Amino acid sequence: KKKVPAATSTTPTPTPTLGEPKKVSMPTQPKTATLSPKIQLPKEASPEAQQ
Image (cartoon, rainbow, N blue to C red; front, side, top):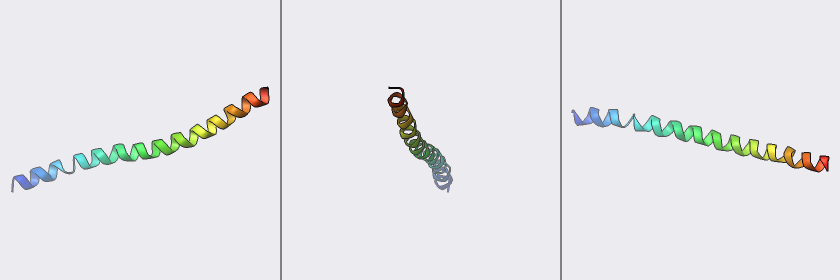
């Protein structure tokens, strides 16, 4: 019985830890990719308009 609660307490600990970084990484990547092209497009248009 002691082994059961020990495994249970160990399982939930790594589960939320791995889930949090994964969820943060997922939204961070798409957000960065979305902002990157948006920032690059205006930057490219700026030098062209200045020239």
